[in-house]
Length: 213
Image 1 (cartoon, rainbow, N blue to C red):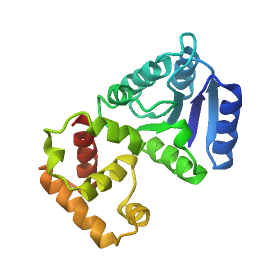
Image 2 (cartoon, helix red, strand yellow; image 1 turned 120 degrees about the horizontal axis):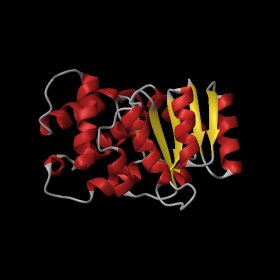
Image 3 (cartoon, rainbow, N blue to C red; image 1 turned 30 degrees about the vertical axis):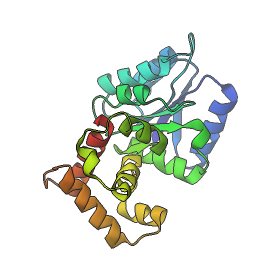
Image 4 (cartoon, one colour; image 1 turned 180 degrees about the horizontal axis):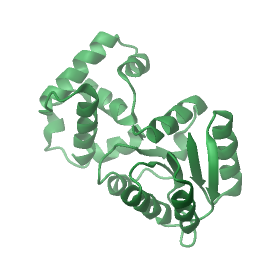
């Protein structure tokens, strides 16, 4: 999978390059600012752009805006944003057009290299990977919404769906049976009023309902 990495910290950028190359990714370009990121994404057309939110010159939201530009111009390019802060406003701006091919992870909470690589690959393939802390912030903004009917366990399962986990992965994460996961997922779909248009499509719709609540 071809990837372009944007990170203004040279040490962190080189670490990401080495990590992803060892995992089999083809690092087609590196950028230290948002302008360079856009130039290299447009030139290389990667499957994935790995983007830091705060980049030069102001270190505010240049990376996020570049990520949104990539989403608008090249929707086939997955965008995985790395942030130092859990900010639901940043996440909602990134996810305004849907959760497909989008990831939002917190740098300090990436403690498992294999899981990080899996998240990167999933986003590059059109899936999603969202840090549950960010999702919890977004869900906590409003209480009068369809999610209010979900049980605590169903919210937990939906949060893991938002991370991009499969039923099997959710089973392993929560130490419950796969059949129990299936029951929770079916209940979530029912309570959110999602039509039976295919399991994967309903998972995406459930995530969008979750993030938009």
